[in-house]
Amino acid sequence: MNNFVYDIPTKVYFGENQLSHLGEELKKYGNRVLLTYGGGSIKKIGLYDKVVAEIQKAGLMLFEFGGIEPNPRHTTVNIAAQICKQEKIDVLLAVGGGSTIDATKVIGATAFYDGDCWDLVTKKAPVTNCLPIVTILTLAATGSEMNAGAVISNLETNDKKGIQIMRPKVSFLDPTNTYTVNAYQTACGSADILSHLFEIYFNQKEELYMLDTIMEGLMKTVIKYAPIALKEPENYEARANLMWASSWALNGFVRCGKTQSWSCHAMEHQLSAYYDITHGLGLAILTPRWMEYVLDETTLPKFYQFGTNVFEIDKTLPPMEVAKMSIQKLSDFLFHTLKLNQTLSEIGIDSTHFAEMAQKACGGKSIKGFKVLEQQDVEKIYEMCI
Picture 1 (cartoon, rainbow, N blue to C red):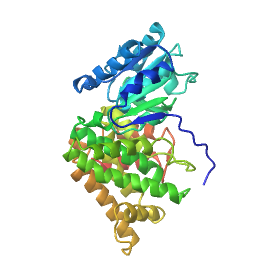
Picture 2: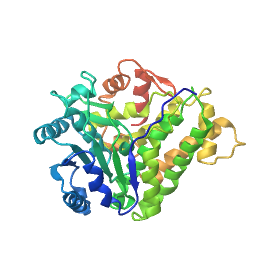
Picture 3: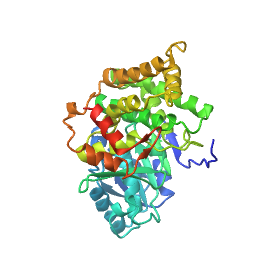
Picture 4: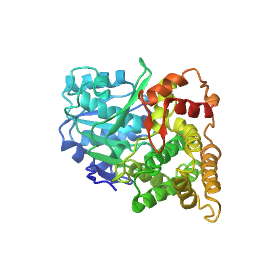
């Protein structure tokens, strides 16, 4: 186990009717607030009016920027950052899912930079500062409400890249704000949560029993409550468990002391960069195929652990049988229980760009994940998804 520093400074207000604290929290960082959001669903569910009322009650100046895309564009970030500069914004308030929060993080950093935000994302220029960020979460998926990460797309170059910037100062997590999330997005979000856990859990280098058992518990939580949320969208316990599992899957806690290089996310970023698909769906299609591809005698012990502890497969069965059963059970959950598309061809993706996508996924070298993947390996995994 490696040494590590653990620090999660994000303050969380979890549960219903917590927005009464919004004004007091925003005031800590200034008086000029830029509200960021996506396609307008927050207006349909009445959340927008509640947020505006709290901001006005606190006597703060409100500015708005809507229309942030599901895979946020660098051009959108640049426009919002210019507003921050012109209006001398003090604090950013992101209301939405991971895409809105991710974009807002990069907006906050670009407000202190005179060039294109893509320079920051590609590390051509360093991040020197960032406006403070407060979030109100409306979709359980990315964990962006408690981590420093952000993922931005550049459609001009077919690139999608991640960057570490700053954790939100405060996040409001009210499960009732996810009641109107449709079945498809609930399923995609659940697949995303699982993938974050898999990327850390499947690790051959370091073992920490305590963290593995926590991750297994989080996986079982998603497997238990996602189907309930699909059948009963307003089931508070189901939505609350998914929301809190999403935050803890990627706030840094379960990766403490572990060294990893993620595999499926690197491959999926190319899918959504080229085809603008939902991130969770891409992960769902890729993950079981990646598992099948990397399963061998060296990786077998982890798959056996996964199968027996998460899916409670009979421990007396041959380990390889358990491993293969675990992958099949995951596939059944993703494609039959959550009813997500099983193949890339179902969503109109063929092999046209696989070679260049694989090259970008490997960064011109290789993916040093659970098992090292060269470019040809990534291409084969894409082909398994057709």
